[in-house]
Image (cartoon, rainbow, N blue to C red):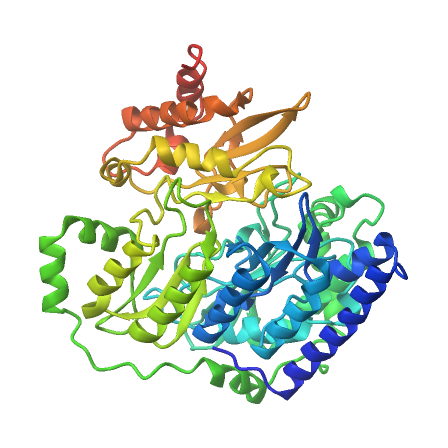
Length: 554
């Protein structure tokens, strides 16, 4: 993983000193809340229902064991013993006292971490998939370019006050596990027949109030032009994006208004004068950053391990976990492991306790090379585990509440904190997620159903990515009461699609039964080997609507 140099540390340290002064002035009354608002947001500090929330950046979702222990310390000392991992691969602490924020940022800086630009109208955390660098279907590791984009965008004065927040994601594998098609800019890396590293650039994706799938902007962009081309896109957006209405300020609205052809022409005109300038990358710079992402010292192992095979044959629960939570690795004898943060009633989706963080840090060193990843589905990943160690790891993960075998299944729910914490939410998300998990607690049944994504958002900001869930749930307000609207047919990845609303919303107590009827409809109509998404695409919404609204829900 990337290691800070003296420039990184100096920048982060100076920002901590600056923000400590700003916090002191806010506490003394020298700064009003209105004046303090933009300053705290660009340092990742929100004021929510009950307390301040601090969002810490985890660039492209990669952590060292030391850094995860540092986050566990914050959870234990400054919060209520846990942190919440987000769909942007960050972590949030929900119970922060303003007087202690600068000390927390100081602690983060000591561990080469920060909260810079995790909020505000700026370029947010650069993301990629949690299996970057190890996935068996990957063409190359996208993290060096993600890191270069992080360095370039951090406190870049030209883009600190954009019309609205801005999100960039990269992927470099056959399967898109970074949801690049619902980002302001999506970058798909690949090599051509000559072995040249190129990018496919997508623009104008996003969820929220007006969800859109990104459109292709440019094919075959040379890797060394990525900064200058992204700069050209941001300049066009900065100049033409709306600032009079925050609901129409995202780049997706601009792209739709201009049309993709006209937008591409504008970007090209902006790019031509700067493409050969200082922002053009060179191989030396790429190699400087890429050196941090060197391959670990993998042992030479056989692709088949007898002990692993024996455990698979003898322990059905372990075999079920391997089938859902273990992913193929590039190196023989190794695998990547998904640690589910979705155990059901015992914890909200994405919440991980300080003790669990410490355990994961320990496992990353004992069974791997001291590295942890955060997925945008809010789970944790150990990227390099020897197959012969999988059974021991699984036993420890189960004991720690992180061994649920539901990766990609119905109860692997993406959910925002919702109305329990967020001042913007119309409805709660966490109790709804847990009620669904309680209704569908039979893992055998879930495995028979196969992969179904279920995403929940407490408001139209769509922090729970409900639009791209196979089943999406949106909390809405009806005369001061919490109700829930359903969408079906959403999908992320190469088949990215936005779900469609099936009809009127439901009261909270009705939600588990609605999910049950949707699932039963799928089971009745699916063809052999057909996924939930494919079934919805084939039969449409009507059979689901008829079943869901056929009679009053019990």
